[in-house]
Amino acid sequence: MRERRRDSLPITFAARAVFLAAVLATLCAGIAGGLARAGVWLPLFESAWAGRAVSAHALLMISGFLGTVIGLERAVAVKRRAAFVAPLCSSFAGLCALAGAASWAAWLAALAAAVFTGVNVLVVSRQRAAHTAVLLGGACAWLVGTLLDALGARSDAVLPWLLSFLVLTIAAERLEMARLMRHRKGALASLLALLAALLLAAAACSFSARWGGLVFGLALMGLASWLLSFDIARRTVFARGLSRYMAMCLLLGYAWLAVSGAAWVGMSFGYGARDAALHALALGFVLSMVMGHAPVILPALTRIKLHYSRWFYLPLVLLHASLVARLAWGSLDAQWKARGAVANVAAIVLFALTMAGAALAWRARHATPRTRERAS
Amino acid sequence: MSVPPFPYTGPESLREPITDALASVIDPEVAMTIVDVGLIYGVTVTDDAVHVRLTMTSAACPVTDLILEDVEDALDRVVDPDMKIEVELVWEPPWSSERMSPRARAFMGW
Image (tube, rainbow over all chains, first blue to last red):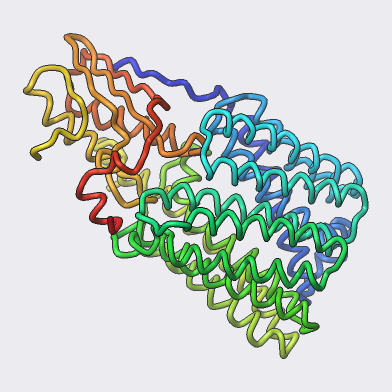
């Protein structure tokens, strides 16, 4: 056997299993809290943890789940053991919220965001570029949001910061990829101006939900049109296989980003568009990105390889169709909102099953001839 | 190809198999091979080792290890089993779009 150079961190299987369990518990509880908020009732919602999951839905989903996944992703990239403190803290923040220790949860999330900000300072020091600066901006938005939450600020003031963390993180990654495409002059400057407007609007929401929300929505709509104009997905959607699937996830996500922006604008004029403002962004934009990138990020985090197939489109179609049902008809009829939310969750479960199936398919295809013989 | 895609030092007989092996590693996000994106900075083949210098487009890329592994696996299939495979990740000079191959630039609309 040839000697191989390996410099990946010696993260043990046990440590990975604990992380995975904490992240899954946080995700499941966050989803349960979201279902209850959307008007779905299940017998298990009578327990004490379920009540906490309802009130901590945003913390569980954004800091506990996505913050942990993004923190892990960045820690794997920078290859520093200390960087894993961020996802460790954010996953335990989720568990604390479920255990009823709300204050611990909020401060642990803030600690996670602080460490994550430090990790991003390291990234910027390694590569001084516009996209790494935007990553750092996203980390700072998470830190401000979690600190405001820990200090007891209203959710109207906290949420725009937490959502900005997700939006800037995704925008940074897309900006990095956009370097492969030729741009018009001013494309980078216009993106940075939009992101600056988004952060200023998030800050303004602490003082005026109306004006802050208006600018926040306009910035989201501007960002959506920038991404639809300059993202490489416009090109890679004409490729085949996994690349095309990823591009579809991205382009559909950008459409929802625009819908979310319009809903924020609508909210500032007094329309009841809160569900669309939050979930067109969190489910339509962010979850679509997650579905698109999971086939490459999951193998990087877990070392489990996946085999792409057309089945990947099934959960994606269900997610977007259920979101249309939830946000279009749900605004008129509460039952549709609940049904749509259940179908959103079905899309997430189906996606998890699809990934598990893809892992099995990869193993079957890369089995040794001897194993194949035995299997047949 | 008239212009070599990256500097190569070593026996001519291995140039093509190594280039083809590296060009079999695809970054699915951009739907292109790592050779077309211009990530390979150089290959040096000695009597007992293959040394590849490559970069990534971002220091925050979590897929780096997977790409390095794919490169090692691809080279493993074409070079002598006794040869050592060394894949070195470098950040200098930083990657820029000028490193993309004509095919990649055409695909991305340059």
